[in-house]
Length: 132
Image 1: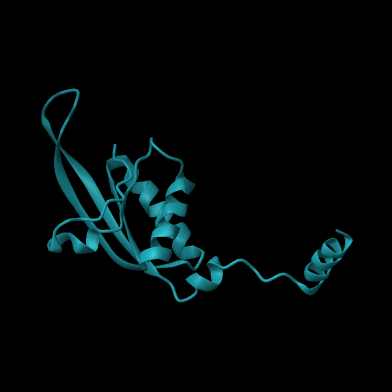
Image 2: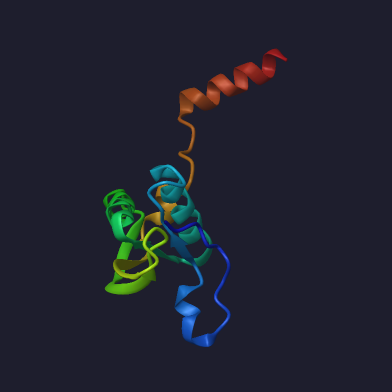
C-alpha cells in the first residue's frame, strides 16, 4: 500500500504534514512504526500517522499504543476517501483514508528517559569498577 515518507513537505499549506508516517500493513512490522513515531515526537513534538484502506486499523493501533503508554495525546483525526487507480482492473476505486495527528504528552520525556540506577545497582557497578 503506502511506504514510510520522512521527507518534510515543501509548501506552506502542508507545513503540518512535515512529520508524516504513511503506514502500510505489508511493508514493516507494527513496532517499527511505533518506534518511528516515538522518534518523530521526540524530535518534533508531534507526528502525523496516515493510512489507506486496510492499513487504517494499523494506524489506530499505533495511535492507541502511544496514547495508552502516556507518550502521546491526540490532536486531530481526519477521515476521507481518495480516488485511486486499481492496478489490476485499471479503473478508479475509492479508498478510505485516515490521518491522526499526535502531540507529545507532558509525561513523554520522563517516560522516554532511562531509569536512574538504584543504590544497589550503583554499588554493584562501583564494585565491578574497583575490581578492574
